[in-house]
Length: 112
Image (cartoon, rainbow, N blue to C red; front, side):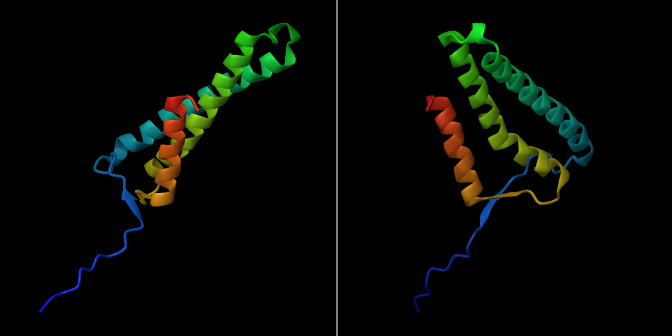
């Protein structure tokens, strides 16, 4: 009489995004990729300049370098997955991948 409670194992989350509109996905991919490269280049140059120029070894530039490094880490934790979802038909993220993104985002917001 009593049926056991059965659930099927779920391995991740489905990302819907712009899946109904495939044409703008290619445009968004290019735009987001260009913005991502500008972020990496700009922050990388700032870090490199503050390390190489001895006049910039002051607390203000030390903290700007740390902020640039955190910005690189934060964008690298989320943007590659977004770019991947624009190009591939697979629109899922695993539970562990979601947990890593959430923890990195929370650490960034809390300043940890």
